[in-house]
Image (cartoon, rainbow, N blue to C red; front, side, top):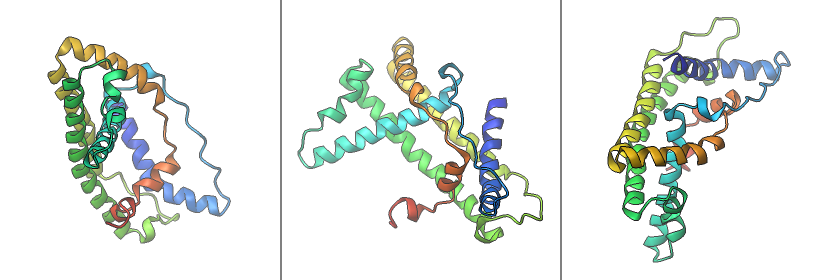
Length: 207
């Protein structure tokens, strides 16, 4: 729980204090945020490892779906994890379905997050804080949504475990950590703030 609270505090720091830092930087009152040091792979919890993994699997699945809809060869995408994780076609199909479910459920949570972001920006002109006043306390609803996202990742991980069976899951899990975790890079507070305040219309090309 301590790790979760630390991540949440960093996120809320970026969300609430980030605009103020940007404003001070423009005035020459603050130094640029230094780059973060990657965490050792062994310290990354499953929620951190499996979230990008499920997104990666879903992206490959969607690309394969697009190619098949055009009657084009999709094997490079459809069979990617068969080779990377040494699993069979049925297992790969199950993995893709779990990733699709994760993606769909995460979008519902993210919509709630966006509502909270809009509510915050409505209270503060342009989403910026008044430097003369102390920052507001972290939104408890945002923390609850943060935990909901984390729990969703773990739920989908357990669904994959149930689908594969414990022995096979442990083997695949070791490969996921070997192939995925080392590629996870920390995101700077500035880039997190830039993404979190974007509206869905901005992210979806105005759709």
